[in-house]
Image (cartoon, rainbow, N blue to C red):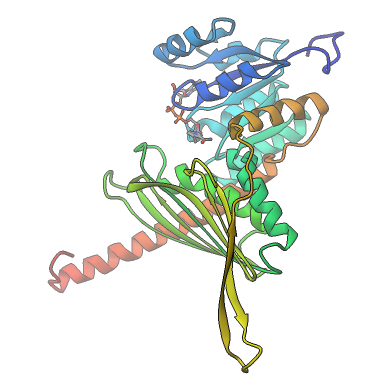
Length: 355
Ligand SMILES: NC(=O)c1ccc[n+]([C@@H]2O[C@H](COP(=O)([O-])OP(=O)(O)OC[C@H]3O[C@@H](n4cnc5c(N)ncnc54)[C@H](O)[C@@H]3O)[C@@H](O)[C@H]2O)c1
């Protein structure tokens, strides 16, 4: 902290650690926020530092996070390094007395995520997880619609499709890389945690790294959710569908217009007969969604939380909830892969072709 200058009057000084694919997007946004100063860009890779340093000449460059953390006037660090490093780096940032933004998911295990949350509590600094979709105006309106009863008294089910011929990763599978977004949105909409989770998936390109994963979650309220996650798909889809007892809605992040659509569709009891239903296929409307970059809103929220001493919406505790669901889904995925291996083995022994 700068001695003598009240937090509200001076810029919040932030560093971005990890300047690969995603980190420069964080740097661009923090650099553009009034009252925020991008003070440091840090990466262990020299080419990454050179590439990103040229875009942000006012920021200092560092190879080692310790050099950044030694800056007493620095308020916060945004961590955009590979997932296996998240928890350890977050703890170092928090223990150095800086506020910490960590890209999703918070950690690779609940145990590691909880260590980061404990470090935030001990230091009294903010810990925020980059669950960017929770800041999307379309997702927020979808949540308001669901919460207002507009879709009916009960939300029956939600399904998410996150498909693309996308970035093929070696250090995390499609569940952790893509599913962190969808799990965070489902938990954000549901406001409860699932009591049952199931996942099935296959590794086609790289052994042991699932390219396609299907998940099924059941919640205490009766809500269920399904996720289809794949970076091996001809379609680029980023869509949620919410089916309520009265209406249905979709949030389609790939749509240029009409990202959010509400369908007055469902089944009504036929008053003329007993136990019969008639299909209601009424009007369809698309509420206006402000065209703002969700990442910008997310970064602004982090800066506001630091300045005003607020708890981030996607705080450490919500990050732990997402990791808990991902961990349980991963267990289910591994159990089903083991079972499939045993069954294939017996089929091979029995001479089944292709097994
Ligand atoms: N919110 C989103 O939509 C979104 C999208 C993509 C990635 N991400 C997240 O961003 C993070 C990074 O993903 P990426 O695709 O940019 O990965 P990447 O591999 O392209 O980049 C990671 C960078 O971190 C650097 N690095 C590794 N260890 C470091 C350390 N100890 N200190 C400093 N730098 C270090 C690497 O050299 C590399 O340049 C991941 O957590 C990922 O989940 C979020």
